[in-house]
Length: 358
Image 1: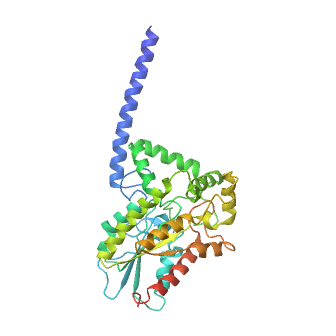
Image 2 (image 1 turned 180 degrees about the vertical axis):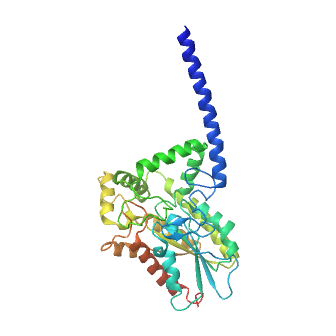
Image 3 (image 1 turned 90 degrees about the horizontal axis):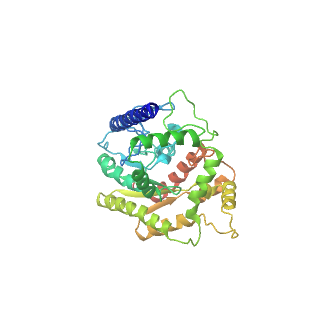
């Protein structure tokens, strides 16, 4: 009887200590995240994956706002044509700053002594609703002449829904912290964002393990299914576009040129990866997947609403036959992919907006 009481007392004390520890941990994590936002915790803002101000990204120092760019003034210098690049981790880039497509594009636009400033406002982990929030909260105050919005086919359609579900289930910062650590330990082989200055970028080093990357790509590829049994993806498209339409309204009202860059997913341009994914669907119909479907849906809506866009898909399909454009087991461009994007965007921008860039 005494032993039973001791056991009960032990478990009761353990329960009390555990509960107090969890409560204190929850409070501590929330205070820490408020002061120093980090991707380890889920929140409602677009700052979860934002770079730490003045921190190192390879051999480059992020600016005082945590953007992967040099310092800039809120007031636009006289005679300068200012472009802001808004996007997610593609805009922030996993390559070092000099190889980022927005950095390269700015250099190309200024090669004839032009006065064009391209501010990279890319923040990893953002989606369409975040693009709208970033424009309103931080973009408009720098008086841009053009907004170059990078829309990634791979996840920007679904980001709004995924983040809403994530916020719904991860109300506890402790649970969010544990889940983030598990993901880092089980899904990644290489580096996550904001490596220390001592680390060197390796262009051919894989980020995720093979199994995770293939399964993740397969799951995303449901958007390419022709004649699906439901219209869930169509709803995702409408939701994502609704935020871009709001951005368009704001830009039109402020006399700002809006150009959307449509960034293809690797499976849309890499034939070898495409073949693996088609086999994973295990279908009798070899044409079950239409890898151009999301682009067509997006462009049709853009055309209906007079939203200007540059679709990179055809150029990336052509170039990928000879050159790898994405980092191994990663959704992001490698150095060659960033270089190609900069070249294609430069040609299109120069051709379509020559008067604005004089």
